[in-house]
Length: 255
Image (tube, rainbow, N blue to C red; front, top):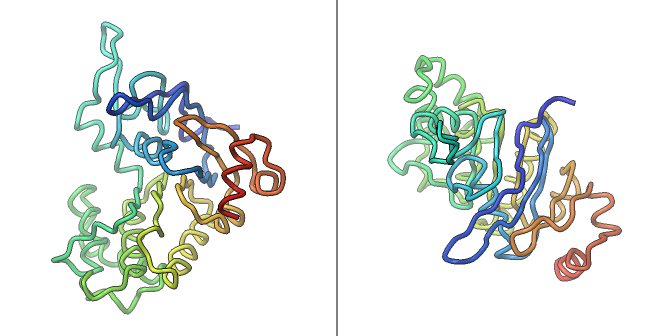
């Protein structure tokens, strides 16, 4: 087996005097879909945000594609924040889709997608525009290239956000409850795009409350509670025979 694209080992993170992550260890392999579930406040989003340096860890080790994420070890052996230049470079390999779409309101859907490859990666604009149009087609929005975000539904905006992340050709895609801000009828169109990505073997770590998606798409489901990982299993086992009492209690409330 190749080295994992994400490796977390004994990770801790405290915020406001509370231990948000407590001795968290998890490997994510290339091409794997890992879904993080658990009650609110379990630490899922914080853990996800450490994977692209939006949150730093206090102790432990966290690497993405073999590189320490969000920190570096100084010559004296102390852990210090990563250089901004290094963090920017690392984030180019990681797509992040948030709960809220964060599209540039003054740009069209097409412009939102090609902007970063041109400005950050130095891709030729004509090539980036063509790629952006292809990505819009891929997420079912080929006819919305000239629409500004205010003219798009929430589900359409989230699909543009996914296309924007894909435009950077990331090695890893992170999703933080990507359907939680959507009306129920729009959830399916976003999940369908994510299912297609999974079928194409995109490495994905997803925080979600959509258990149907987790059951259908995940290679492994990771259950978090009170800042710790309490159970990890394939969905076929987790949803039929959860072992940890807190997993059983959590699933009994949502299934």
